[in-house]
Image 1 (cartoon, rainbow, N blue to C red):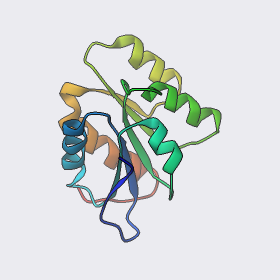
Image 2 (tube, rainbow, N blue to C red):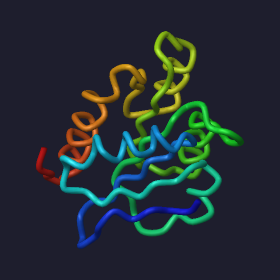
Image 3 (cartoon, one colour):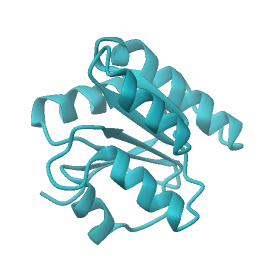
Image 4 (cartoon, one colour):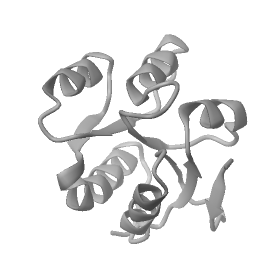
Length: 135
């Protein structure tokens, strides 16, 4: 699929990695209230192969085909990437949540709470990184 660029103009880049097309659209819609450029990928491998620019935040599903979101996080941390990563997983997946936080995820959000938590957390992480976005 590659990346989908939803506008530009020196706005902070937020990457979404989600295999399910409906969930990708939903995450894009959730972030539409923020003044950010959203780039969307259907797999961790497609993100790593095409990675361009400098994202300020990455939001990934834990359960991706091929390289999982947790494996992607480990890969980024091994390369000393300090990019804030939010992982999204099924509710009550405590082992994945614990592993994500141990690997340095900025947050682990359960899918039923993504509609409220994802835009709020992305805005907070960008603000903490010195970027103010409208919300």
